[in-house]
Image (cartoon, rainbow, N blue to C red; front, side, top):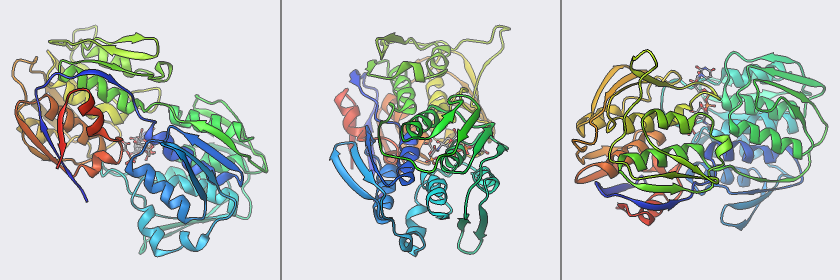
Length: 435
Ligand SMILES: CC(=O)N[C@H]1[C@@H](OP(=O)(O)OP(=O)(O)OC[C@H]2O[C@@H](n3ccc(=O)[nH]c3=O)[C@H](O)[C@@H]2O)O[C@H](CO)[C@@H](O)[C@@H]1O
Ligand SMILES: C=C(OP(=O)(O)O)C(=O)O
């Protein structure tokens, strides 16, 4: 069931919104429960499709899953069932999301074998997995890819730590290698490691389970392998991509919004990147307060040239917020170049914004120039299909700011990353219905 939203835009919103737990952190943390036979309790788990699918996969794999409360689960991987992992059912289940790939590192480290279909996730260009397998093979695994079945397998009698220089700072790749190295023999050093807050959270949790990881937050991780990991408790950070989306929503709809409990110290360059678009936002305790603004003006570089916002591995700007930056720029005063360096097919949704009246030139698959309308001519409501999770949310924000009615089909793409998004938007005054 893919579902549709009907939105009547042009309303100012008002009130408080609380970000959900971080999707991409949850996917890493849930995979890590396989590393121990003891109980791991995880809180602030977002109730979203991708995460729920991963929890179901863990259950089918034999992990005991207990729901303590909303977003609060206990997992115990004391017995697992490899028949499921080798079955056609898992070939379908594992392929439904991207995050399932991070089951491989823990499976390999704990059981000496790991299997995975080509994972799903956003269709946003090539999404290679070479870095994952490069790292796991360097630790001693044998790798096989069945090209007919699109099925990966890894086997290892034992894993041995070593110096690994990653060819790219892959987020999920680093997570996979760290989890395997935590139970390998000896010392592993991972250079050019990704260091997103998701990974920092994972490493801190592994240390609480008895791992010995240092260099957390840097691109050089040192992992002294241990023979056994124990249980722990972990609470997910608020989702920084959601937080950025609500900042964009407030600006586009001229709304006064407070985003609660954002964990400001983990937001990196996100707040300042929105400020460069002229959006006022204030830190108030651990909340972000965004006053209602009639207009916002994009800054220029010091030499007077047009501002560029581009993505980069952390602590650079996350690619997952570029579609929000782009949509917000359509109603700013001034011009912006959005440069999506990581993914080839993430900017094509701009055609829909152009249909709605936005002034955008797609220069090539990676770059779009936006000429802001300075809130003088609102976007027009239209019918659209959500192409991917973040573009879907960007289109939703465009629809909430637009004059008239919009229809967004394929909202499964939005639901896979945002918990009860219609309910939470309604609570701050949005006119949105799930039809
Ligand atoms: C489930 C999950 O956590 N998904 C996130 C994860 O995906 P994922 O872990 O799949 O993404 P990777 O970090 O592996 O790479 C993302 C893309 O960037 C390219 N790349 C990466 C690193 C680098 O130094 N240079 C480079 O060009 C890769 O070739 C790839 O095309 O990280 C991405 C990048 O932040 C996010 O968009 C995804 O939301
Ligand atoms: C691209 C994303 O997700 P996934 O990696 O799960 O496709 C995302 O979270 O923006």
